[in-house]
View 1 (cartoon, rainbow, N blue to C red):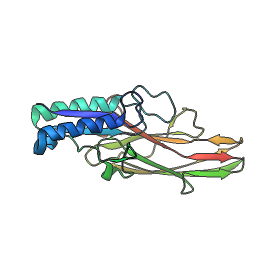
View 2 (cartoon, helix red, strand yellow; view 1 turned 180 degrees about the vertical axis):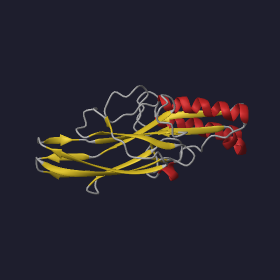
View 3 (tube, rainbow, N blue to C red; view 1 turned 135 degrees about the vertical axis):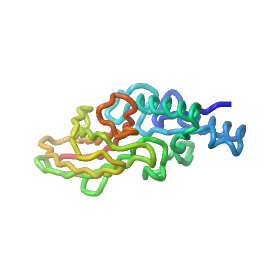
Length: 214
């Protein structure tokens, strides 16, 4: 009977992501043609039910803050939020598109590569170049910060990239001096108005690659 935005996380171990699809289908069965006028489901990649407790997880408090603002504007002013996330169900798992425009929702999409791949094997002392394309879904805001963690130990350092915009391409180099297997990460943050100074409504995502140093 009201406006609803459901937020679901793809790595949630307590509220499984396919439950979100089940509820969405029940709403669609009940509302029929008015489904899009009253309901949204936003899936977040690399996110659990609670605060991030591993380097490969991101915080989703900003998503919840933005959802509250958007559902308020929807109910009180008739301003419809951005579209629901697009997804498929593959082997009982929720699968979202790799492209932000195709995925929709509000979470940015990070595509990190090392020498054009998601993994590389090098010798100790060798310098490698990382490249990434970061995209925000249409109407969902702009990238306001990027943070790198080259060793995969959850020690992210912010690196300035230039003007905030919907699509950002960045590159960085790093030299691995010790043998081992590393999972370097790039974490990106988007904000609806492109405000890097606010502590609220910051939407995060990340991507990782694998570097094996011999």
